[in-house]
Length: 217
Image (cartoon, rainbow, N blue to C red):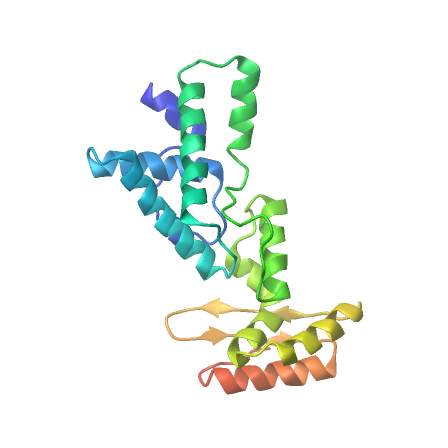
């Protein structure tokens, strides 16, 4: 029975949700839950879910996405696990089981209904994660949209950022790329921007905030 259940969600997941480079799917939630259940040797469901909530909070914070309350995350996880147990025991017809299996590839969204993002790029990244089913990772998303997000974060002010954002949205001819490599000490970035004012502001922000940045062609 265990092997049959594992096939439903792809097996156990020993990787912490907080170490993901994308938003988790429902099958990731189940895989992580069953891994912690196996490793915890008798720990309560409440304790296991609490550990998962911590990992989810860390992941959402890392990606600068607003996160719902712990109680709401807990309720969503427990409701889904309960539904999974009912399905896996064969208490549902084939149609319901197929529908449930399809839902396992959906994003497990711990974002509140009306999230308030710090930056336009954070919102775009979140929307892209949802529409792509989490198939586009965090770092790959940065390769285009971190150009203004870095500017925003380095300056700790959003007045200049808002002005840049308006200019950027109004100019449909902007062609921007930023190549980002994350290591223990630095970001390596290169910006190719279509508007001179954004280009100058971006370079100035990076030079100001990251003394160890290396610009490549």
